[in-house]
Image 1 (cartoon, rainbow, N blue to C red):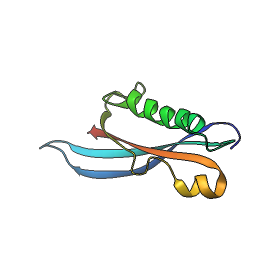
Image 2: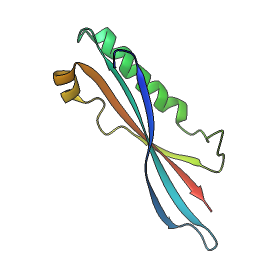
Image 3: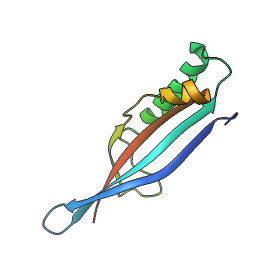
Length: 104
């Protein structure tokens, strides 16, 4: 983790009725931003936090280029960063969860 890692993994899906002829699926994807840091000085950690915010801003309201039927629904960041990673691993970790809705 000496270099920046941005990891994207599927998280889950919630299927439900959509309208009379279609169903809907809310698909969630986690995006993790991780990097070991040299010092706990704010400038270094602020840059990593800003990157997580920029990723969230980029996807807000945007359809996926490779799957335009998927409409952005929400972005969640339940914990801004993992304090236990900072304390024990000297590593910044922030996880965003993007949810896209697909009607079919």
